[in-house]
Structure formats: structure tokens, C-alpha cells
Amino acid sequence: MKILMVSEDLPGAQIGGLGKHVVTLSNALLEQGHDVDIMGRSDRCHADSSKEIGFNGRLLPGFDFSRPGWKESQLGFFNPIKRPWFARNIARALLREAARYDVVHYHGHLPMAGRYVPRDVNFVQTRHDQGSECVIHLRFKQEHVCTTMDARDCAACIHPTPNALRRSVSGMAVRRYRSETADSFSRHKTIFVSDFLRRSFLRAVPDADLSRARVIHNFIRYPYLRERAAAPGEVEKGEVLLVGRIDSGKGFGEFLAQVQGWLPAHARVSIIGDGPLRPRLEQKYAGPQIRFLGWRGYDEVIRMSARSHVLVIPSVWEEPCGTTVLEALALGKQCLALARGGTPELAAYQYYDGQLQLAETMPRLVGRLAELLGCAPVTVPLPASFPMDVSNAIPRILDFYAE
Image (cartoon, one colour):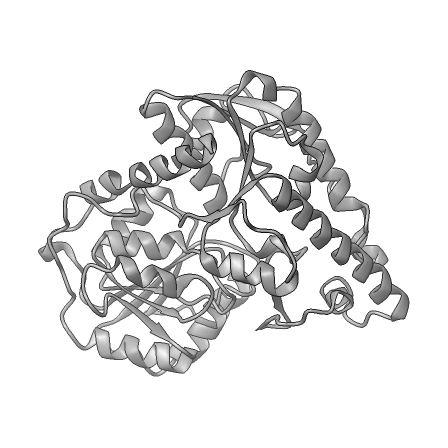
């Protein structure tokens, strides 16, 4: 097949989980003999963009996202026109190329983009986060999971004390956002990376038509991980690893506050990642048992994961389908996370009972961590295959393309 992948998260010097997902899928499809191009941001494209993101094919400049703000923060409300305007620009860019491909697969943050794509175009989008119904994509407000259904309440995510006018305008923006997204889902095929995301959208838009949607969990490159697995003697007892963007919702601050006084003397917490909260947390908590390593390349992240005793995913927001969890499971590592979002669905991919331990609260998570650190690290021989390898997801995705 001739496939055009589209994402505003690509290219870039450092790409997040969504961008890595697109590159992993695209390279795997290329290896199977399909023709795959990626369309991304024209304002970031340069001669070495494909190499920079690790993509083995051609990267096309599609749309400019250099000034996406529209002064919403200064005005203190979400603009009802802004997101549809950017979605229309993405649709226009991909439609310039769509006739040359059998399918166009969009991975991005503007789910209403499909509304501006004609029904006769074989258009598929993957929903990676709660951005189907939430304009900030997180469903996380004032350090807690957001459960409100009133669109006017969303004004508090753009202004600390929104007045009636700001609530009204933001409410209009969010209602339009959700309505156009529902229209897009009814027009074209949609992949949700967890059933949690599908159910979450239906809570916000109960009458949405999701008959053209499927759930296909995230995936990893299992052979790559298996090659980098650690031998039993290489696993470092007491080594705890956390990986991710150090930002609100990711739970690093909550975990570090709770773990004080709970770490055994032989234990050490290593944190890989960067983000706006890193300076404050590093100043407050860094010491002999807690170290901040900053951003590291993927190879090093996986090697450190393989050598760790336990991996902790401390997110307090509802992770849709954490790739870090899948990587830990594939490496045979014990991992701890909160029982939120799509994470409980991933317990189906454990090698052994108790490999993925889910806690209802951060104190319980830290208590379980202390118990695990009191025991020897668990090591298991890795099987020849893992159900969440990208090669196992591709037949389902191709089937959906052809549907």
C-alpha cells in the first residue's frame, strides 16, 4: 500500500511518545514492503529531518505551526475559531497529496481534522490522548483528574478566575470542538489506543457515533528491546527508574514527596527526562538517593530500564496507553503505576502475576515499592515474541485501512 502518515509532532530534535509511535509504525510498514511517507511541520523541516527522527523514508513539509497561540492566554478564553482553523489547514495540506496514496493516517492533536476531509478519501486517525474531548488534551485540572462535563467549566484551564463572559466563550469553543470531533469520527475511521479513551469520549459526547472506531493498543519494537535485555547478573538491586516529561500530571513531585523516608538504604531513584518542573524538584529532592539525569537518548533509556530493579510510572493523570509500561513489561521488569486511565488494560500483557502492580493511591504505590525493593529483582527469560510488538499490530491496522 501507499501510505501517508501525518502529524504536527514531527519533525523535531526531541520527539515525544506520539512522534515515536508514528516513526515506529512507519518504519515497520516500510520493512514489510509498503510505501510510506510522513507529512509534518514545514517550519521544522530541513534536509536531515528524516535522519533526525530515525525515519527511513521521505518526510514532506506540510503545514506551518510556528505561531499557534492566537493570544488565548492573554485574552483568558479558548477561541472557538482557532482549533477548527488549524484543523482545516492540516486537511488542506494532506488533501494536496492524498490522491497519490491508498490511505492517509493522521496522528495529531486536532481530532476534527477529518471533518474537513471528503468522505471518499480513505482517511484514518489515531487518538493518542484525551484531546478528543479536552482542548488541553489532558483532562487534568488543578492537580486532579478532571471529571466535569460542563463545557463552560473548561474556562478554568485558560484563566484562573474566569468571569461569565470568559466561561461563555470558552464553553462555545469546547462545544464546537467536541461537536466537530464527533462529526469527524462519524465520517472517517478512528483508532483509539485504549478502550479507556473511547469510553472517555462517550462520557463527554454520549450520542457520538463511534461505529467506525476500533481500539488498537500502542505497540513497541520488541526485537530491539529483547536485544538490549539485561542478564540476571546485570540487574542492579535497589535501582528504581522513572522516565518521562517532568510536568504537571506526570506525578514526579507527588511520588518524590511520598517516597521520603521509605527508601531502603541500598535503594536509588533515577529520573530520566526534562520539563518545567525539573528545576524546582531537583533543588528540593536531589541527593545521594535521588538523581535527575535529564534527557537521554532512547538506547540509553532502554539499557537503564533493563538494568533496573523496578520501574515506576507515577502519573497522576489518566495515561491513555503508556508506552513506558509496555516497554517495562516486554523487558520482564516489575513496574508500578496508579490504577488510572488505560494502564489497567495493559495487565493483559504481563509475563507473570504481579509484574504490573497497580495502586489506588500514591502512598500505596510507595508502600508496594518498598516491599519490592526488599526482595531480589525478578528476572525471567524473554520469549521469542511479545504480543504488543509492532509487527503484531500491523495486520490489524492494514485490515482497518482496507475496510
